Length: 458
Ligand SMILES: [Zn+2]
Image 1 (cartoon, rainbow, N blue to C red):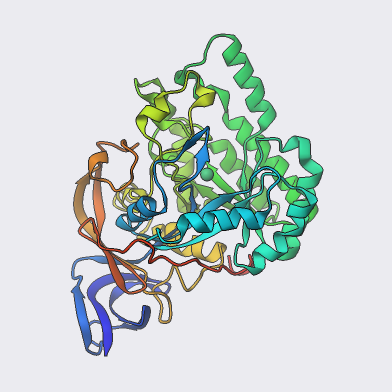
Image 2 (cartoon, rainbow, N blue to C red; image 1 turned 30 degrees about the horizontal axis):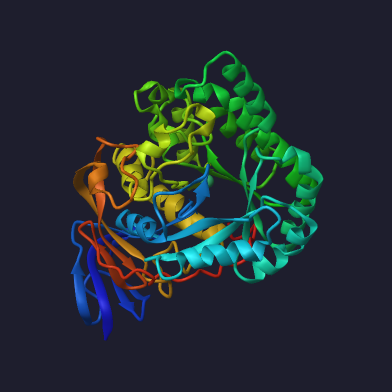
């Protein structure tokens, strides 16, 4: 007998969307059947009128991280509860190497943060901040442990240590580690920032001007030269501008294999937000852009130029965001995990800008493929983990920070009216969220050993 059946929903499967009944046994999808064709189950979820989506994988989170002398509002418990409530069933968080520290130490530290707290499954990337010879020599061992991607920040000390980074890129290529690259040019940002500050323009209203789209385009071109020279695979995180999209398209037209991610805030908000009284709440790197950039990103979502929408969830209280005396000291990032999927459905699918299948690719199937988790995650297919979302396409929700599960006390999308919201979230066959209430036990999430990066799979 099956443990659980989800019946009557329109399921998004790799072979298309159709009415299907899903049978679950021992935490996995045991059967994908035509309506009414499933054997008996101990429990049944009647999902008629609903959509059934594979749980999303968010490959870009910062939980329990320290930056600018403060700790993020969300740890692995509140952060993964927010994720689960929003239909995300796996995350990949960034484990930061400490100065002079080993990569193994970074992963051990992050493992301590997640273990006993996470309610969904999680993996790690390592943020390579100090590309010493010993750290570079560890890359292969990280891949063997299932940590199969590195983060490269191009804006802090990157130019000064270029040769060491080149060695790291080559080691990553050799080991099958994907480079996730934060592409902003440190010199251009430094120049723009100096000019603004010396003119007394230190307020958040000037933040966007300190990190122009050109800085993103310049860094992409530079990174692509380095990855071409070393054979490394590049995945550009949180692209924000039309200039960045042009850079990705140009590389692909030259036959380069390049992967691209964007982030929700760049799809819904413009730089005018920095002129508001609490403009600090929207500060992230790179900054919000213009209406034209938003249009370019939506076109790139629809035509496949962008592969993944990920949150870059990095949450702070409003008081912490506003405590800085100049824009360079505002801790970057904001809460996004709970709204990723419903906002993309509402603004993208319901408004006819992208198809439902494309949305599932962007938040579930593509991230699972690219980061070595497919088809265990990211697909409604027999044998996969039963990570599923019963999604009500007609639910109307007004986003209110007070009703969200993040410990941040504000939401960047406060007041947005959303059509479509997750009703039930299943993780390995267990109901972990129902009607916006978390039912999961802290610590039930498991560490995900990810496969090495493969060009063909992604
Ligand atoms: Zn980030």
